[in-house]
Image (cartoon, rainbow, N blue to C red; front, side):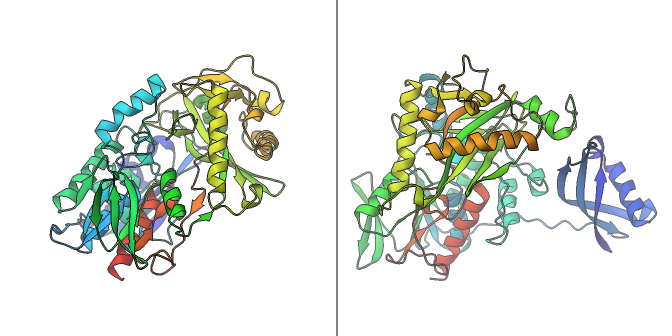
Length: 512
């Protein structure tokens, strides 16, 4: 017999199988000899009271042994299958390719950037020299933005597709099994490159292809239907189905579609700063302690506040993390955050952003939100003075309209410069942040402090453009065979939701 129950444990007990088994027997009022095994289904931290506990949802096997069902997918060989072009090798593109293989199609991935190994050199140049390779950076290249932005796998997209299947694919390619049960699964930037390489090798071994350093420079259309693409201005590749999974920063793709009179739409997004605290401040606030227990991970937070009619919220929180320079073009500053698998850096950072609505940027140009976003990034670059030095301000100084005399030590490698962030951020963004930050401090003890630094700007929270598609066929309403996909098209937000959308687009081709 099997039973599903929830138990609570103290942090030091979570890895002790004997303690768990004893607790299960007590909860079920059974002799411990009848508990033949158990499987943890979900694991989460509950820090609402002074005593921090773990909550475990467990499947218990009573008087029967657990049955092991191997879940590794055996991908068929599709070398001679019908080709599907996939533009972009981020999570949407990679998972679309895997699903194409399951469905008998041959995926051909077109990636403007480099493979994960070669990307490292360009990232080193960004961090150490302040030099951006516009085709190989934190956003462009194998694995997409998530590869070097730490691999958070938390999502609410459970109604869009099979989250567990996505997580299992990561496990099959080298991720820790804990991601299957943790409430906020996380892989880590130090481990993701090897996993992404393994996924690529699976695609190639099944007959799929991946072309690096290959930028889509034109979309080939005949009588309202795609027939292929142009690559690097001089090569044509033909196919009847194209999945457009280019991510939220491929501005040239939006411009190409607009130039060809293919319908795109301006879309709301969010804009703000990345805020960094010493991790010990966050630990103390969330775990109600002076020193975090060795059995607890660095603490996480999620904050949201309504200021007038505008939402202000934390985004992409990185415990034990690092602030990274994520510009994709020259003369712009864009910041993001990531954490290694152990989350053992001394700082905690989070994007803290304000809703930007279509009413904030007047006009009818479908690229107006993108242009607005770009203008703020360029102002940040000018304020920093070049070499990707980022404008920054202490938190209380920002709220008090005071230039910071100095800045705290922080994780942003290219360097920070004390600047009045009001001179960069739109007034409604700046004023909304100033209203929200003290309120966040009331929700979380120690948050509102001048030990925290605000680094500008966090602007790539989501795409400022939507590429429309049919809800059932996933195809663009004007162009048959074109499947706008995931974050770059405005339909996902994060690794797992993007992967699910890639799978859905591949399945839509099967049903076309």
